[in-house]
Image 1 (cartoon, rainbow, N blue to C red):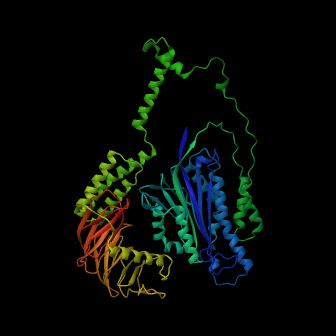
Image 2 (cartoon, rainbow, N blue to C red):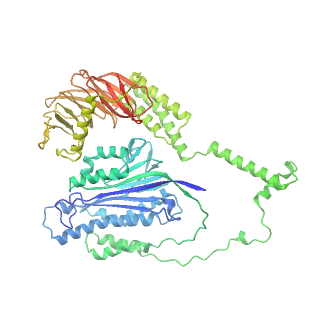
Length: 623
């Protein structure tokens, strides 16, 4: 027999800041560290799966303009590095201490123990701690964090922010302390996870890393990040890339060994040794508390107890024989008692299977049933929003429910029926017109040239060549680059010249819409926010603002051409093209692409014809 299970394969990516730092200094981002524990080879502990930790500890005193000796700097680094080591060791010890309980219960107990022991660190105002802990056991994932930590799940070409997704993951309070909540949910075969500390450099490139997570393998992903470190020695990153794939192994019968619960004295010797070396006032209260908890009285060996039923005199009645005796008068007379036994056993097994099929759902079926129930409720809520003239709210509910149903682990006739009802409601709201795409051999030269230019500028922004922090979107127009950030618009002139370019602030007056997401340029600049607000700018001044009530999405395309009367918002997730009139800022038309193939990339040609590519490598056009 073979056992099929979900096996995580982890790639650790750790780069600490090194530019201009001497030994003992941690840099502006503080101390970064990673830990990954795998007990797959341990038959007793493998039930609890894998445990991971991403940590950052920052000493506030490191930011002060005080003179420090090299010895003092080295001591500070040891002190803050010790925090992550201690938390990791406690997490490992407590999580795997009782392998017979469920992974979520083990995770919760481990967090409570960590909170009790390291509470002193968080009372100390001189230290800032950012730690993310998560465990993957089979299809179950449990996550908790303190401070800054992010974890992204890539599934079927889409990215999911696990800590903020309430449809697929649940959040529960553990206790009113540091690690106070557990976010839990299901992972599946083919999923990829990117867990990281959001340092300023990683945050500035977060958009690109999410794209890499979808498109690249683990090795290619790591190479991309390593390349940034070569370009920028001050780049720092602590991240885990995890691939989840099904694995098979043969099952062999093994006798279960009786094992004693690990003693608390099994805490890593390295931690105890380092405590003797580090004499820091900051850690003394914590170490005294830790030593008190590690002093555990050893209980005497348990004396085996005699169970009365095992030593009762006389012949013990077999449960099947007892049942046969009771049913004997009502059963046909079989000459062979073995035949009667087989018939009765078949009846029992058949009844059990029937009960299971009718009343017991597996985890995937439960998740799907929950998603369907939420979707049906969303339909009713969307109708209410439409009656209240809240078009944006209705679109948000419908698109969110469609995405949730697409992500469900199992499909059924009811799932497809509910999804069809949601799409029908969205079609009615959008006044969508279905259009059939036309197959083409290749992309036009204009699109190829513009795509090449965008890839070049994208690389420069990724490497921060223009010194623009956290670029959100960009567009090119007449040899100039325009870049959208959270609070400004920047311009880089003459981008095709060989000289080094500097970005200048383009926005003179007015503000950007909150959470601006997309940018398009035709001489004027158009910024579109996540809430559907469209702002128009000319020569650095805001000249108009409109509410489109559209949902841009995270992976959409927003484009226009110099002579076009329209703006084009292409939603790749829904296979829809929203055409917005530039003069009025209102929705002019919605095109629904009549194809089940998901869109990989989309492009707008200079003649306003839209081209897109699909996963099979073919190109199509809409006109």
